[in-house]
Length: 421
Image 1 (tube, rainbow, N blue to C red):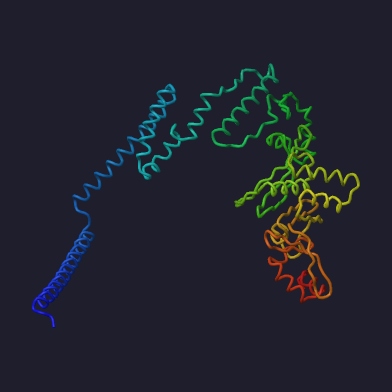
Image 2 (cartoon, helix red, strand yellow; image 1 turned 90 degrees about the vertical axis):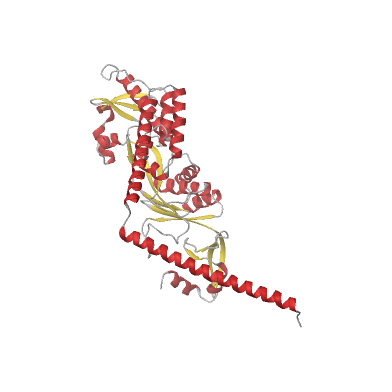
């Protein structure tokens, strides 16, 4: 039985605990009352609107922000003006001050002054332009077309090269080297691949005949730098859909090559093997034997084989040696049965549609698919697990399941299923 001292200790602990609980409940009630009063004050303030003091402070803060923005805008604009006439050393000091001001600004302030910034030397593009202009001399055009059309044409070409190189350095704009320019009425300066300039007249160019030959006006040929573009072809490799077009230099009378441009929305990029394959397919349907890529060189060799009497089967076997693990099928142009010819996603992983023929390519090694009463040839790609039929159409994405299914069918049943019957 506990003694008197133990009872006293227990009693004290109980009383302290009870008092603490009461204090917590009292504090909680007080806090709740304060919260309720605070909510009431906020609600009353919201209903009554901001006080005159709040309005004054808001307007004052707004005024200060506007003043600050105007001061920074003035400083950036003034700096832009002064930098054009300052020495490099002075400009560097001014640039340091302006950069400090800019980075101290809030994102909202930067967005507000974005247009001013874009035209100031703080803009990296403007800095690159300034560097180019301070280190590269602009070519002079002082010859007169009427007196020396050759010198005038050469100088115009040099000036155009300078401007394009500047745009490429500053903004990454691709360089499109001009091949022909008008220097006088009916007189043109023409530049070859070796950069040699020659002067030709309208009668030398036979402009009207050129236009008729290519189904274009001579003016449109000149506007396109003397180039004539063929029909667009659709090519798909590795899920990337692109457009290919052959380019012909009508002035010099020779093919330039083929341009391939990914269609809008294409986000994937091709690796080296896929790029070579795309070049091969595009060169094949555009009959481009002047290309300088690996794929176009392979097609040039194929065309020589065909010209020397080789069969298409022999040409395809040659291509398969260059691209081991890949298969190819050539057929006449037209639509695939039951699907659009533009997006045959289940026909191989590479495809091109040309004006006269279609080429399908797919990966995989030849395997035997055993049916009830015979076998069929398929192609198994171990990397993706896909199985393709003999024509290049994907027929399964799991080899074991496909083999188990085919084993329950006859060759005739499989052929009917392949035809959708």
